[in-house]
Length: 110
Image (cartoon, rainbow, N blue to C red; front, side, top):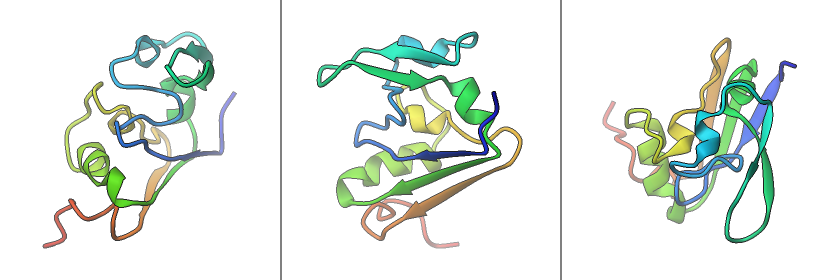
């Protein structure tokens, strides 16, 4: 199974899909989807290998409460503490769409 598009958001804690910081689901390489325990609701998520196989990974992120997570996910090194930093398209492109508030902590001097 290969996805054409993986459309993602980012939570203030850096999670994407239902892949949460340092969760066991981040290490899953065999299954396409796994249960993702979280305090708010029982969830199921696709795994990183499935999502990263998409031809396009597109993030849409809005709001100041996401600015730190955006900085860590897109300006820092890959880190299991910030699952969004681990998800990129392996065979295509990764596109990040941000409003000003979400992009506030990114270096815009370039």
